[in-house]
Length: 296
Image (tube, rainbow, N blue to C red; front, side, top):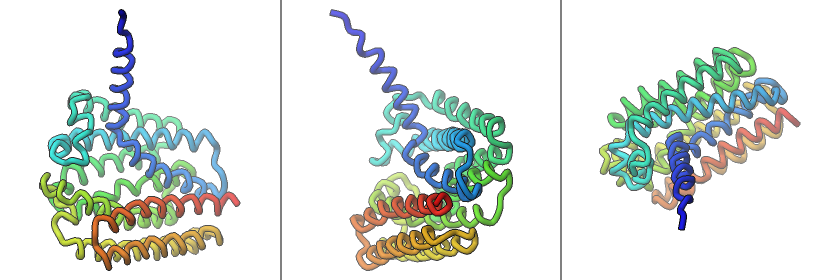
């Protein structure tokens, strides 16, 4: 009897581990904001090649930054139940190999964007990665309850990259979108952190829900959510958007705020997870409506 199956299975498993290292679900969320921003910058549909090239470069940059994050956080990932299955914890990937992989992705991202898009988009993408690695991961995450508030700025950069890819400049419109995502990140992440607050406490990470009460956290979530709603609607006159975007921003922002109000009245993990899931829907609806508004 021959046994040839384990080889391919092992290779697939190893490849899957390296993909997991990049946190692909987070990358998907980042790219949802990139392409619509490019459409607004173009006031129409940019060339397919430019979209593909920008998405590939953004994916490489975000994947590299996320991989470094896993490399640095492998000690606390081992403690937290939410992250105990990550490849550096399970031993599927050696730390040295993960770091080499991360750096290679970041170098390739810069070279790709500089070569196929423009230098400004490459600089912005690498700046986002550097901010995520040095400001959030290495500094704020383990030292400040404002970690995700300030550190979340890295996740806002794709709108600047997308705009720069089309115009080779950074204008007020993408800065406002940057601010929308900046304000959206705390309620989105804190809602998830409510469920895993014991994990963060065990790992000694001062994420908001693990160091203050759920009542205080839900109050902060509501404040940020209302601000997101207001700024999302304000983007309409700032960027000369049409009725489709205006209606979508009012309705989706209103629903997002309703979830935050419900959490404020009943601050429980179940309510927080409902808000977390809807926060993803909100961002998706907002940016899809933005693209549709320009294309229609």
